[in-house]
Image (tube, rainbow, N blue to C red; front, side, top):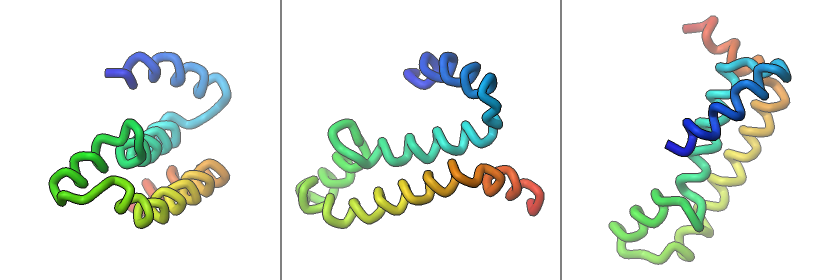
Length: 91
């Protein structure tokens, strides 16, 4: 629900700047994935830690590599957006 509100603001701005809607969608999806596993809002990490009966702090030392790697991928995708749209040619 919040993305519907924010998306209606972000989408026209991105289009006016010249960002491809597919690139915007992929980047938003990847960033939402990071948001789902990072505290304080990341519900996935809290649910996973509750199921496994471990603390969030003990999980973060392993999760930080995933988060850093994902930020590197986001940076690459922002620098080279043709990587996102070129994959459709091969499918």
